[in-house]
Image (cartoon, rainbow, N blue to C red; front, side, top):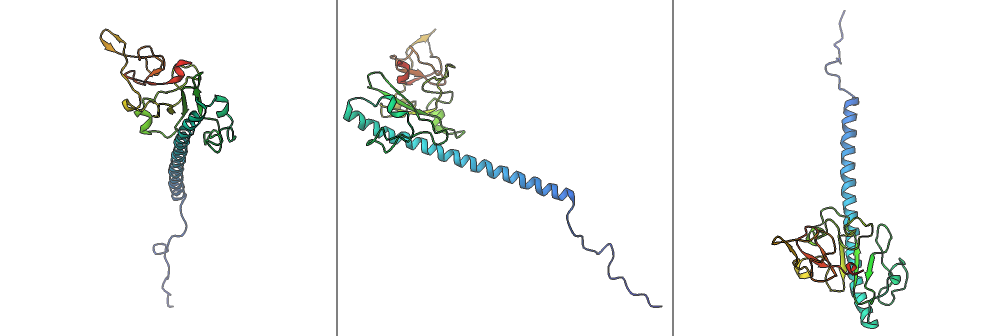
Length: 214
């Protein structure tokens, strides 16, 4: 009796399908890639919104100076509160507001309208401009009364972004204790030359903050 040769065997049979462990590895890798992609997209969105915030404030800078030239004072706070309104026309097409929250930018003006500041909060972690301006622990108005400014980026009628170094109105604090210059970080300070200065985040210098006068 002739025996037919075996065409297949367990050893040479190709394996089909995937194991549960392989599926779990693939799913884990896919999840990691999705998280990384989401983080990159989120960072891009945050950076785009920060660019919009900075651009809005630069547009405000020009518009507010034009308003001052026509009226002899900066606009009252009431004109800067209604997002999307036409109350600032013709200086701006509308009142700009934060692209994420939709809230108006924080506008402060002295009572006589001679000075103003306009503040926002940048949300991109590691934006070097925040630390450069001494605003890494907060600048501007202290709306929540925690002893530190609630914002980290702003402009003022001094034609400079607030807290931007010596060229932007930084001065050395004048007071001293035991021969050491100091001021209280983030607070309005008599150490500085007048009532419109706030100490930077390290307590080593002052910058103009007209909200200190209020």
